[in-house]
Structures are given as C-alpha cells and as structure tokens.
Image (cartoon, rainbow, N blue to C red; front, side, top):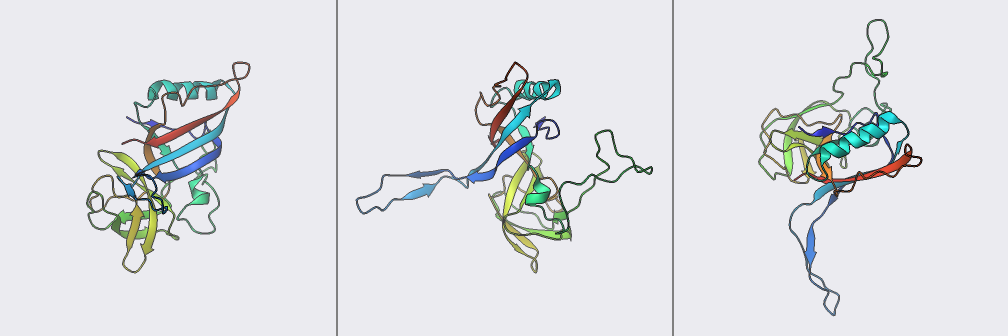
Length: 229
C-alpha cells in the first residue's frame, strides 16, 4: 500500500513541477564539436516540494510518520500534482482553484471545510493500448479543455498511478498522444484521471526527509521524488 502525500498538512510554498528527466549517454565531443548522444529510455518523472513549513505538533508528526513509513527509498509514495486545477487542468476557463465541493442539505461542509466532490472531467480509453504505446483512443464525456502540456494519470493494476503529459490532442479522431510511453498496457474503459493526476514515486535519496528544526519545533523543509520503477 503506497503512502499518500498529505497536502492539507504538508503543503509546499514552492515546487519543482514534474519533469521527465531523460536518461542519455554520450561519448566525448570530437574536434569538430560533433557529439553522439543516445537515450536508453523515455526518461523518468522527477519533482520536488520546497519550503514545507513544520510549525506545530501535527506537521512535525506527519513528516516523521511519512519518513519512517517510506524507509528511505524503499517504499512508494503516491504524489498528486500540486495546484493542478489552476495550472494544468482540463476544466472550463471559468474554473478557479480547487473546489470546495457540494455541501450538506443545510449548507454546511465537513469539519475541514470540504464538501462532497466528484469528477469534473470524464475521459476513458475507448480502445485497448499496448505497453509502451504513445497514443490512445479516448471517449471524452466532460473535458472543456484538453491541450498539449496537460497531465493526466492512469492507475495501472500492477504499477499503480503514473503521470503522462499530452503532446497532441486530435479532437476529430479522439486520440491523445503523450509521453512517456505507457508503463503498462491499458484496457478499453480505463479512466484517464484529469482531476487529480497522481504518480507513484519514491524519495530521491535515503536522507530526503532529514529534518532541520529551530528550537526543536519549527522549520521549512524540502523533499525530492523520483518515479518508482
């Protein structure tokens, strides 16, 4: 069972957005300046959260809890795109920030101020796609904006959720091209998650969650992740 990163408690003030880090090798440059570069694969996702302020007992204990459960780089952590709705979302242009959701019949929300929330975007695979495919046929029910550069995720049965970034969307043919290649084959009817895309990650190093605290109880922290392969 993967750890879920708790944004409501450990919220970064600054992020390094997901970046598909290519894995290339190259020999030295020739006297003319030419260099041969080859890629071993399509790259892996990396991202980072910075300036997560630990300011009370709850935040310090949450950080320590994740650190001990992760056991360094050993165990996976499911990371959702931070502030996805505002930055990348396939929502209507009038959409502004995270939803508070639908309240109870008396107009009240849950104790954390959030109501009942369903999917805002509905996109599913209309046909199966093979392992390492870079395009997929889709059925779009609700998605006001699908554009190059947007992210979605697919929750694979074996590998868990993985990010994919759109390189081209053909609204006539209902096909989405993306990178990286599919980490696992996809069956028809599988959901493409545009509302809150997640990726299964691991800590970038065993010491990522080492804390630095002032007076033993306060301090900004940073943590880096790499895709869990």
